[in-house]
Amino acid sequence: MTILSVSGAKGAADIAREDAVAFQMTLANSVKLSGKGLHSGRETVVEIYPAPENTGIVFRHGLHMVSGIASNVIDTSRGTTIGFNGFRVLTVEHLMAALRGSGVDNAYVEVVGGETPALDGSAAPYMDAIGSVGLVEQDAERRCFTLTEPICVRRKDSFILAVPASEMSITYVMDYDHPMIGSQTSAYVLGKGDFAKEIAPARTFVLYEEVAGLLDRELAKGGNLDNVIVIWPDRMSSALRFPDELVRHKVMDIVGDLALVGGIVNAEILAVRSGHALNIEFAKQVLRGVGSAKRAPRAREATG
Ligand SMILES: [Zn+2]
Image (cartoon, rainbow, N blue to C red; front, side, top):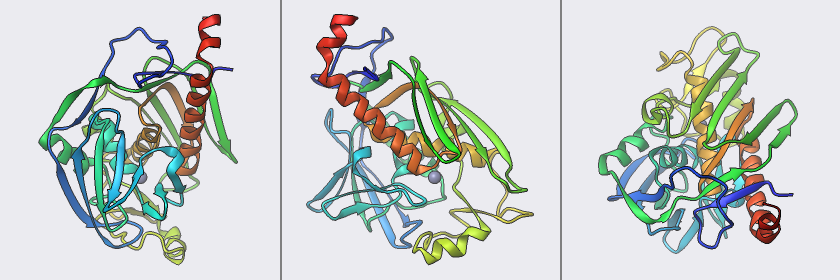
């Protein structure tokens, strides 16, 4: 059973697409951002450097390093944490979304403090920083994963269904039994709309009744009204940037989590009530599909 075809990577299987091939990109120069980590509460610094073709996104500190790949995700409690050999980086999803949304395929991310800075709770400051230095095109083709059959992952009443498509589109459905939220839907096609204006500015949020529980679990220690929208039953802590800012943030989280496949997933994706755990499970399934596609290229050629 072939779940995916993969294009762009060295030695990968044949391409199943006919659209124009895109080339990998990296930053033209380094950028530096700092601030409190949302969960650790520590002062954190990230410096994002250009990296050679086929590096992917690599987080490092001193001699430690970990690739921004779903198989390195070690925790998904209210954020996506990657780790390897004792080195861990918390809350990578907004930075990953900004890199993907900006078109960055390769970068070294030097991390001080073990977490990315929360900044204003969105991906916009990362996008702005990357945009301020610009990108350079590299010699290798961008890595794309094109589904050849549907994938569905589910967990309780949440699911992600992805069907083959020639580009990545995401429809997110959130459904909260909460008077300030209720049901909201947002859709985005990567590369078509203006990610920097439409999705990246959407901030993270928390229900007021969840705050004490998060703090008990040593989470959200760096959260404050400048980097999180707090939602009470009858009000929110700040005016929203979009009427549907909350569900746009969910789209941004998926873009960031799915960037951890190390390329672009060409699929029409419907995500209903999914969070980081399910997003990462989906990304891992895509990577497992790539593994099987690579293992059986001859079989596919024979039947193709
Ligand atoms: Zn988020």
